[in-house]
View (tube, rainbow, N blue to C red):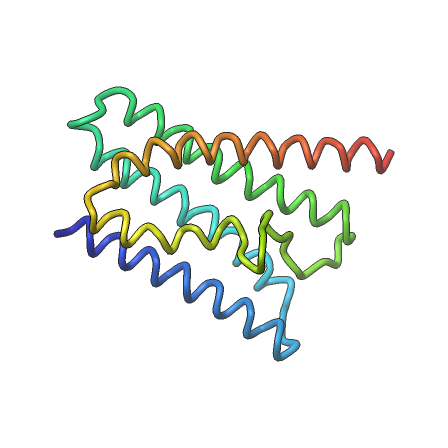
Length: 155
């Protein structure tokens, strides 16, 4: 039961994060502080999600739960930094708009997190945890490469 509450609260927090960012952009009230708070809250909430999934999956996955959790936490925090650096290279130090995630048909990659609820309620959380640990690591490598390309191009 606690895993369902955890998934629901996480989804609600991500929804509020998306909502307040969009509201600030629509009203023209985006700020540098809000920009940094958005990145820090996003990175730390994803890191916390991986810690929680690792703890919850330890009995079933053993040491692999620790490995996936560590990979997810590192990926969330490194991607947060890489994306801020991508923003800085693309838009300068005065940027207050976060880099967009890859997407298609109006949906961003990050929107997939809303599937966490049904995945959890259907009992597929461990499979999701494995896929998310791998996926977050791949996304992290992608952001590092993007940042490196922009850094090299700006020299």
